[in-house]
Image (cartoon, rainbow, N blue to C red; front, side, top):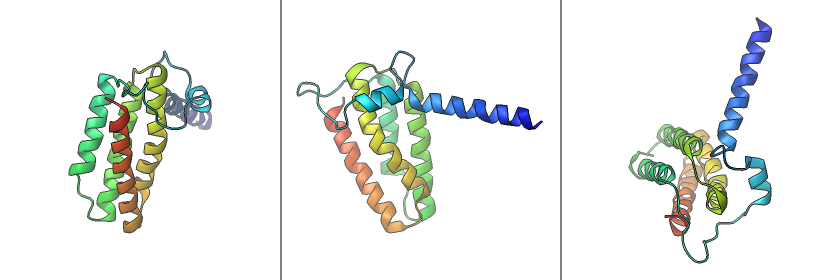
Length: 147
């Protein structure tokens, strides 16, 4: 029984890591693209990067959640954080972007995802509001770099 439980945990852990670390089977592994990729958002020769339809829809849902869900208490703020975490998992698991546009999306996500994690666990109302304000600025930067 113990070996089966341990094996099941290992399989679940591996599946979670694989789902979180790649946007599609055609892309480099997350560690490769993250260690050699850009660290700041840039434009595509002065133009916005083209996001795939799935990413555009996912980001629209994230923006909608951030502007419509109440955040008047720590419980509501944490609920928003959990909702954003789920939406980000869906974004990552269905992403089909490739190349530099994909790398640029990961630059954005590497900043945005930890902020959503922080929001989901934040007990301090002042810190939660600061995190939300930062996340709104991140969305503005996303809009400046992606279409």
